[in-house]
Length: 282
Image 1 (spheres, helix red, strand yellow):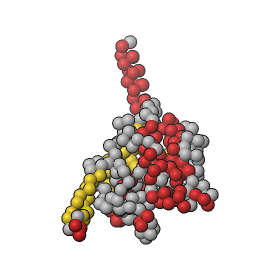
Image 2 (cartoon, one colour):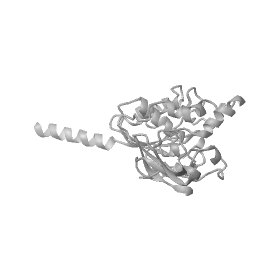
Image 3 (cartoon, one colour):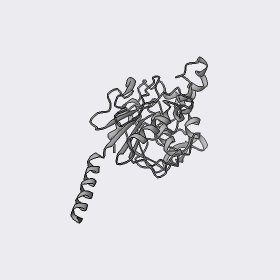
Image 4 (cartoon, one colour):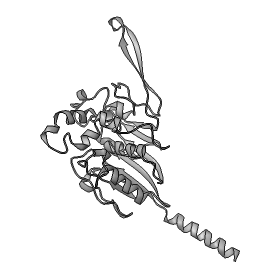
Protein backbone atom coordinates (compact mmCIF):
# COMPACT_ATOMS: atom_id res chain seq x y z
CA UNK A 1 0.00 0.00 0.00
CA UNK A 2 2.84 2.37 0.90
CA UNK A 3 4.49 1.71 -2.47
CA UNK A 4 1.23 2.48 -4.28
CA UNK A 5 0.83 5.80 -2.47
CA UNK A 6 4.43 6.81 -3.18
CA UNK A 7 4.08 5.81 -6.82
CA UNK A 8 0.89 7.85 -7.14
CA UNK A 9 2.53 10.92 -5.60
CA UNK A 10 5.53 10.55 -7.90
CA UNK A 11 3.35 10.22 -11.00
CA UNK A 12 1.26 13.23 -9.94
CA UNK A 13 4.36 15.36 -9.45
CA UNK A 14 5.82 14.20 -12.77
CA UNK A 15 2.57 14.95 -14.60
CA UNK A 16 2.37 18.45 -13.12
CA UNK A 17 5.94 19.08 -14.23
CA UNK A 18 5.09 18.02 -17.78
CA UNK A 19 2.10 20.36 -17.89
CA UNK A 20 4.00 23.42 -16.67
CA UNK A 21 4.68 26.01 -19.38
CA UNK A 22 6.69 29.22 -19.58
CA UNK A 23 4.90 31.92 -21.56
CA UNK A 24 6.67 34.93 -23.09
CA UNK A 25 4.43 37.98 -22.92
CA UNK A 26 5.19 40.88 -25.27
CA UNK A 27 3.68 44.27 -24.42
CA UNK A 28 3.84 46.86 -27.19
CA UNK A 29 4.52 50.58 -27.04
CA UNK A 30 2.80 53.71 -28.28
CA UNK A 31 0.87 53.14 -31.48
CA UNK A 32 -1.78 54.80 -33.62
CA UNK A 33 -3.49 51.41 -33.94
CA UNK A 34 -5.64 49.32 -31.63
CA UNK A 35 -3.77 46.09 -30.82
CA UNK A 36 -6.33 44.71 -28.38
CA UNK A 37 -7.64 41.16 -28.43
CA UNK A 38 -9.45 39.32 -25.60
CA UNK A 39 -7.27 37.25 -23.24
CA UNK A 40 -9.43 34.53 -21.74
CA UNK A 41 -7.42 31.30 -21.90
CA UNK A 42 -3.91 30.05 -22.69
CA UNK A 43 -4.80 29.79 -26.37
CA UNK A 44 -5.41 33.55 -26.53
CA UNK A 45 -3.09 36.33 -27.75
CA UNK A 46 -1.09 34.26 -30.23
CA UNK A 47 -1.39 36.90 -32.98
CA UNK A 48 0.36 40.26 -33.17
CA UNK A 49 -2.85 42.18 -33.85
CA UNK A 50 -2.26 45.06 -36.28
CA UNK A 51 1.42 44.18 -36.48
CA UNK A 52 3.24 46.25 -33.86
CA UNK A 53 6.24 43.90 -33.56
CA UNK A 54 6.50 43.40 -37.33
CA UNK A 55 8.14 39.98 -37.15
CA UNK A 56 10.89 41.03 -34.73
CA UNK A 57 9.97 38.30 -32.25
CA UNK A 58 10.99 34.79 -33.24
CA UNK A 59 12.88 31.74 -32.00
CA UNK A 60 10.89 31.54 -28.76
CA UNK A 61 8.17 29.17 -27.64
CA UNK A 62 4.80 30.15 -26.16
CA UNK A 63 4.87 33.75 -27.41
CA UNK A 64 1.82 35.78 -26.41
CA UNK A 65 1.08 39.35 -27.50
CA UNK A 66 -0.53 41.59 -24.89
CA UNK A 67 -2.21 44.25 -27.01
CA UNK A 68 -4.21 47.23 -25.81
CA UNK A 69 -6.11 50.28 -27.05
CA UNK A 70 -4.11 53.39 -26.16
CA UNK A 71 -7.08 55.71 -26.65
CA UNK A 72 -8.81 54.33 -23.56
CA UNK A 73 -9.19 56.77 -20.67
CA UNK A 74 -5.97 56.80 -18.66
CA UNK A 75 -3.73 55.69 -21.52
CA UNK A 76 -0.96 53.48 -20.10
CA UNK A 77 -2.80 53.45 -16.75
CA UNK A 78 -6.19 52.43 -18.14
CA UNK A 79 -8.28 49.67 -16.54
CA UNK A 80 -11.07 50.09 -19.09
CA UNK A 81 -12.02 47.27 -21.42
CA UNK A 82 -9.00 46.86 -23.73
CA UNK A 83 -7.06 49.30 -21.52
CA UNK A 84 -3.34 48.67 -21.02
CA UNK A 85 -3.49 47.78 -17.32
CA UNK A 86 -6.50 45.50 -17.71
CA UNK A 87 -4.95 43.66 -20.64
CA UNK A 88 -1.71 43.04 -18.75
CA UNK A 89 -3.66 41.97 -15.68
CA UNK A 90 -5.75 39.54 -17.75
CA UNK A 91 -2.59 38.10 -19.31
CA UNK A 92 -0.94 37.59 -15.93
CA UNK A 93 -3.99 35.81 -14.53
CA UNK A 94 -4.29 33.54 -17.56
CA UNK A 95 -0.66 32.70 -18.34
CA UNK A 96 1.31 33.20 -15.12
CA UNK A 97 -0.55 31.35 -12.38
CA UNK A 98 -0.72 27.78 -11.12
CA UNK A 99 2.18 25.72 -12.44
CA UNK A 100 2.87 28.12 -15.32
CA UNK A 101 5.51 30.84 -15.39
CA UNK A 102 6.01 33.97 -17.46
CA UNK A 103 8.69 36.19 -18.88
CA UNK A 104 7.56 39.72 -19.76
CA UNK A 105 9.13 41.78 -22.54
CA UNK A 106 7.98 45.31 -23.27
CA UNK A 107 8.87 47.97 -25.79
CA UNK A 108 8.80 51.73 -25.15
CA UNK A 109 5.47 52.71 -23.54
CA UNK A 110 4.94 49.05 -22.73
CA UNK A 111 7.70 49.53 -20.16
CA UNK A 112 5.63 52.22 -18.48
CA UNK A 113 2.61 49.91 -18.53
CA UNK A 114 4.49 47.07 -16.81
CA UNK A 115 6.39 49.24 -14.32
CA UNK A 116 3.17 51.01 -13.32
CA UNK A 117 1.33 47.72 -12.92
CA UNK A 118 3.93 46.13 -10.66
CA UNK A 119 4.57 49.42 -8.89
CA UNK A 120 0.94 49.58 -7.77
CA UNK A 121 0.02 45.89 -7.56
CA UNK A 122 1.56 42.80 -6.02
CA UNK A 123 -0.36 39.91 -7.58
CA UNK A 124 0.32 36.26 -6.80
CA UNK A 125 1.77 35.42 -10.20
CA UNK A 126 4.85 33.52 -11.37
CA UNK A 127 7.02 35.99 -13.26
CA UNK A 128 10.67 35.02 -13.73
CA UNK A 129 11.88 37.99 -15.79
CA UNK A 130 10.73 41.47 -16.75
CA UNK A 131 12.73 43.12 -19.53
CA UNK A 132 11.96 46.66 -20.68
CA UNK A 133 13.27 47.37 -24.18
CA UNK A 134 13.86 51.11 -24.69
CA UNK A 135 11.77 51.86 -21.63
CA UNK A 136 9.49 54.90 -21.57
CA UNK A 137 8.93 54.58 -17.81
CA UNK A 138 10.48 58.05 -17.47
CA UNK A 139 8.34 59.59 -20.19
CA UNK A 140 9.17 61.33 -23.45
CA UNK A 141 9.47 64.99 -24.37
CA UNK A 142 7.85 64.10 -27.70
CA UNK A 143 4.69 63.28 -25.75
CA UNK A 144 5.09 66.61 -23.93
CA UNK A 145 5.06 68.38 -27.30
CA UNK A 146 2.12 66.31 -28.51
CA UNK A 147 -0.05 67.02 -25.46
CA UNK A 148 0.87 70.71 -25.36
CA UNK A 149 0.58 71.62 -29.03
CA UNK A 150 -1.38 68.90 -30.85
CA UNK A 151 -4.27 67.90 -28.57
CA UNK A 152 -6.42 70.71 -30.01
CA UNK A 153 -6.59 68.80 -33.29
CA UNK A 154 -8.99 66.35 -31.66
CA UNK A 155 -7.09 63.30 -32.94
CA UNK A 156 -7.14 60.67 -30.20
CA UNK A 157 -3.66 59.40 -31.03
CA UNK A 158 -2.05 62.87 -30.97
CA UNK A 159 -1.98 64.51 -27.56
CA UNK A 160 -4.63 62.07 -26.35
CA UNK A 161 -4.84 59.75 -23.36
CA UNK A 162 -1.76 57.67 -24.16
CA UNK A 163 0.43 60.70 -24.83
CA UNK A 164 -0.69 62.30 -21.57
CA UNK A 165 0.29 59.19 -19.64
CA UNK A 166 3.69 58.87 -21.33
CA UNK A 167 4.58 62.56 -21.06
CA UNK A 168 7.46 63.20 -18.67
CA UNK A 169 5.10 64.37 -15.92
CA UNK A 170 2.49 61.70 -16.61
CA UNK A 171 5.01 58.86 -16.55
CA UNK A 172 7.02 60.07 -13.56
CA UNK A 173 4.16 61.20 -11.34
CA UNK A 174 1.83 58.27 -11.99
CA UNK A 175 3.36 55.89 -9.42
CA UNK A 176 6.39 55.23 -7.23
CA UNK A 177 9.12 53.97 -9.57
CA UNK A 178 11.18 52.68 -6.66
CA UNK A 179 8.42 50.23 -5.72
CA UNK A 180 8.29 46.90 -7.55
CA UNK A 181 7.56 44.46 -4.71
CA UNK A 182 10.93 42.79 -5.18
CA UNK A 183 10.85 42.49 -8.96
CA UNK A 184 13.81 43.60 -11.09
CA UNK A 185 13.32 45.44 -14.38
CA UNK A 186 16.10 44.64 -16.84
CA UNK A 187 16.44 47.42 -19.40
CA UNK A 188 18.09 48.01 -22.78
CA UNK A 189 18.85 51.21 -24.66
CA UNK A 190 20.41 52.68 -27.78
CA UNK A 191 21.43 56.07 -29.16
CA UNK A 192 20.61 55.76 -32.85
CA UNK A 193 17.66 57.38 -34.59
CA UNK A 194 14.90 56.27 -36.94
CA UNK A 195 14.26 59.90 -37.90
CA UNK A 196 17.65 61.19 -39.15
CA UNK A 197 18.13 62.89 -35.75
CA UNK A 198 15.32 65.34 -36.55
CA UNK A 199 13.70 64.69 -33.16
CA UNK A 200 16.91 65.08 -31.15
CA UNK A 201 16.54 68.86 -30.58
CA UNK A 202 13.34 68.08 -28.65
CA UNK A 203 15.03 65.48 -26.44
CA UNK A 204 17.56 66.52 -23.76
CA UNK A 205 20.97 64.86 -23.75
CA UNK A 206 21.55 61.67 -25.70
CA UNK A 207 18.51 59.88 -27.13
CA UNK A 208 17.30 57.08 -29.38
CA UNK A 209 15.07 59.28 -31.52
CA UNK A 210 12.02 58.88 -29.25
CA UNK A 211 13.30 58.76 -25.68
CA UNK A 212 16.02 60.70 -23.91
CA UNK A 213 18.60 58.95 -21.78
CA UNK A 214 16.98 60.14 -18.57
CA UNK A 215 14.26 57.58 -19.34
CA UNK A 216 16.41 54.99 -21.11
CA UNK A 217 18.95 54.97 -18.25
CA UNK A 218 16.23 54.87 -15.57
CA UNK A 219 17.29 58.19 -14.02
CA UNK A 220 15.05 59.34 -11.16
CA UNK A 221 14.51 62.83 -12.59
CA UNK A 222 14.34 64.57 -15.95
CA UNK A 223 17.83 65.72 -16.90
CA UNK A 224 20.24 66.25 -19.80
CA UNK A 225 22.10 62.95 -19.68
CA UNK A 226 24.99 63.25 -22.12
CA UNK A 227 26.65 59.95 -21.25
CA UNK A 228 25.57 56.47 -22.28
CA UNK A 229 23.63 54.19 -19.95
CA UNK A 230 26.20 52.11 -18.10
CA UNK A 231 25.55 48.44 -17.41
CA UNK A 232 24.10 47.86 -13.96
CA UNK A 233 22.23 50.17 -11.63
CA UNK A 234 24.93 52.46 -10.28
CA UNK A 235 24.87 56.25 -10.46
CA UNK A 236 25.75 58.01 -13.70
CA UNK A 237 28.35 60.79 -13.56
CA UNK A 238 29.07 63.28 -16.31
CA UNK A 239 31.42 66.23 -16.57
CA UNK A 240 30.79 69.75 -17.82
CA UNK A 241 32.71 72.98 -18.13
CA UNK A 242 31.96 75.49 -15.39
CA UNK A 243 33.39 78.41 -13.42
CA UNK A 244 35.08 81.57 -14.70
CA UNK A 245 35.28 81.48 -18.51
CA UNK A 246 34.32 77.82 -18.22
CA UNK A 247 37.90 76.94 -17.33
CA UNK A 248 36.93 74.49 -14.60
CA UNK A 249 35.36 71.05 -14.79
CA UNK A 250 32.32 70.18 -12.72
CA UNK A 251 30.72 66.79 -12.25
CA UNK A 252 27.04 65.94 -12.00
CA UNK A 253 25.87 62.64 -10.54
CA UNK A 254 22.48 61.12 -11.28
CA UNK A 255 20.77 58.31 -9.39
CA UNK A 256 18.70 55.55 -10.92
CA UNK A 257 15.46 54.05 -9.70
CA UNK A 258 16.12 51.08 -7.42
CA UNK A 259 14.41 48.17 -9.27
CA UNK A 260 15.91 48.97 -12.70
CA UNK A 261 19.07 47.32 -14.06
CA UNK A 262 20.60 48.09 -17.46
CA UNK A 263 21.76 44.96 -19.32
CA UNK A 264 22.46 46.39 -22.78
CA UNK A 265 23.50 49.66 -24.40
CA UNK A 266 23.47 49.49 -28.19
CA UNK A 267 25.16 52.82 -28.90
CA UNK A 268 24.63 54.79 -32.11
CA UNK A 269 23.88 51.65 -34.12
CA UNK A 270 20.66 50.96 -32.22
CA UNK A 271 17.54 53.08 -32.62
CA UNK A 272 14.25 53.03 -30.76
CA UNK A 273 12.72 50.66 -33.30
CA UNK A 274 15.77 48.36 -33.24
CA UNK A 275 15.07 47.70 -29.56
CA UNK A 276 12.19 45.44 -30.66
CA UNK A 277 14.81 42.70 -30.96
CA UNK A 278 16.49 43.17 -27.57
CA UNK A 279 14.46 40.51 -25.76
CA UNK A 280 17.44 38.11 -25.86
CA UNK A 281 19.89 40.58 -24.30
CA UNK A 282 21.28 39.43 -20.98
